[in-house]
Image (cartoon, rainbow, N blue to C red; front, side, top):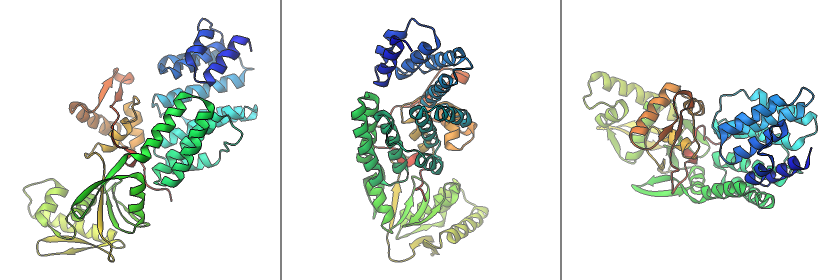
Length: 406
């Protein structure tokens, strides 16, 4: 490897993309193309970066398997930054295996960390935890240690383990400062701010207060019966009743929790759950059926009793009832939470992360665009969606599959 390539690689490792380009911008040999691609990725020019990395991979010969594998890893990181999540993870896994076989441990770990970050974006927390636990960051360069600890911190935050998240963040910040890479220092600082911002609204006894993630964790561990409107569930301590895929039952539970310790009229329950202001006998019959289903599911946590006016919610025991409300309301809260990271998302990637149909996501995006909350760039397959960051609070509780790890 010549001196210019070596100098450019060192500049990239330190986060100096412009310094690297000064050394290789006029060269078209495969090593220079690969370094130019990485530099363009650091500058945010992701389509150009991907093109250069693909040209570099084609330029390396059959005997340069190690260099081609490095290009695959770099292209996978560019795809992650572009929020293109539909590619097969087997290609990245094969590249990581090649790097390990050739004793390039740092890049092999880097490849596996890209896989972990992809799983986190998709909300596959158990898979991400298993993949991360298989990695040993000891002995790695400080930059990779920082990336690994940031992934561990995000995983802990998504599982509402704020103590573990704070410890991982402290290690990430120390490694980022040691590496001296501005992007890593900024990312660790942003994740640290997540612990200090309000993450939800708590409502108890008619009083609403903002709650940070640590306070949410304490509330859920207190044994209080909590109607969690962030992740659409009913819980008391370790007992959890998921209602995300039962929208009618969740709506009934929320209305009853909001009225606690009072009851709710049947007409109001019908209006809220079935979205009609002109109920007939069929709606009343359906209400009885849905209340029966909710009563059976919630039996370990709470009782639902009939009153003269309607129905009332009563916890099993002496605990109170609290509501955990999202910082933003609306059916598209999870979609806005994904877009709040400031990246440009494709419709297909959003659908994959939300585990929803692409057509459902498209309809929601059209509604949000009409309300001025999101905007699109590009057309057809190149179309991407953007939203301004939601200042003042974190949307970590609204991200897909944000249920605590068990």
